[in-house]
Image 1 (cartoon, one colour):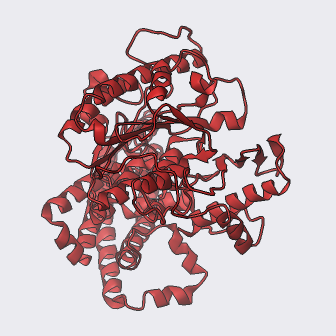
Image 2 (cartoon, helix red, strand yellow):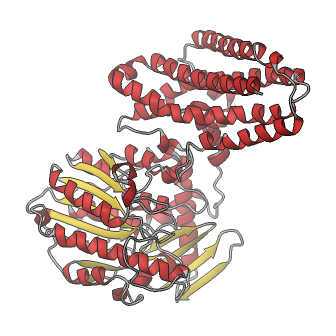
Image 3 (cartoon, helix red, strand yellow):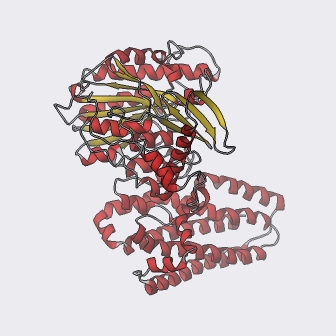
Length: 612
């Protein structure tokens, strides 16, 4: 039995070492980029990538582990199978590695399923590799393949023939159990988020992050999750017509109402993204009374936006909508595909390029939903997550409680070089709605737990603002508080627009006006252009962002959920099911052509997503 376990251990370890060897070859092939990176970052890249190497080695090891369960009496068949299995797997692993070497030089990202597009156009594929050193790469492929197969066959030859007879039942149970245990390294450990690119991204140097990625893992993820289909399933009109319809909604002028005092520019900017902060719990927005008393009180000191809507229904979509001004997709999320998000504009990158110190704070796992990859791409110099907090400050699922994160945030702000652009994402108001204080909103059902968690987050944010007012940086700072998305709770009033309706509040010493409301219909995606224009910074790259204070602005809001969308105008809304093509909700006196505006926006925005 021990000989079988030893074989599997050696087999799995071999693949881990092969992947590290492939990474070293990648460093050598891109020698200039490696040299610019420096030895310390190269080592860190290899160490961070080890986790993904182990994950994919676990996938490779799964079939041999399951099949060895049937080798209690006879095992020659197992050795014969392993020869074929190892040769086939080695061929594809080495082939991907070799192709990736040159494609990374041409594309700037690791090979993924988009490469399969070129199977339809082989002439273009060969043309794109015209400058590649084909012969040296072919020699390297053969040498690597021979080396990998030789080592694997040697391990099999020196271990499998020496298996001994064992109990069929015990052998089967043991190795089925070991196969189940492989799920742990496959998903990257016991953490909440399964293995994704964020698990190995660690630097603001793109090449260091790319080098950490395991190529076969990346290719398999891309093939299984995103694929390479460029067909737009939401194709209702000729492409030019849909694009023209959407373009007509945006007016990129220069005249706008100025509500921020930039006399002492540059202005510090803090964005607090409040988990699941729905308008349905804000009394000032006709929500449930008594849930957010601190927020309601603070509206008298700032600017309350009463008619804002989330772009999507999940945090990963909300992050991109807020920070990149980019609309949500109904059937996927762009944040999961680094090769696409790298092309997006973003607030942290804009502010960083203008000399701002940028940072992101979150008490949980930034690897969740691949957010960390996006944050590093988009220009955050510093990322603070659950690793910066003590275990005693964590709830059972997500991470550090809101008041703990906000306290550290406040302390760190005193040490930050100004001007700063910093974002904080809360988490205590996410289910399971655990809070470290005495219950204020009684009840054990989900709705009352939800309300009680928001009451706690409200108190934590209120305390942060109270203390922030005492800081010297307050007078030259703008604080924006808004939600990542809305929430179905409380269940009444139940409608899609109510589910996506979110509050936004501006506070800080730079406000020219206070205790006012902005009732213009707007979206999360509009924040980017609005902020940049208020601070006299360029905003033209944010094509999907509609400045809330722009003169002659066309007011609208679009939101997407799984296979559906909502289209809102000041005089009404429609909610459409994309599968059946039915209008499931509507209100007001919208003209029939407004449905076409919504469909055009869906078609154009998803088409833009596909082309990135």
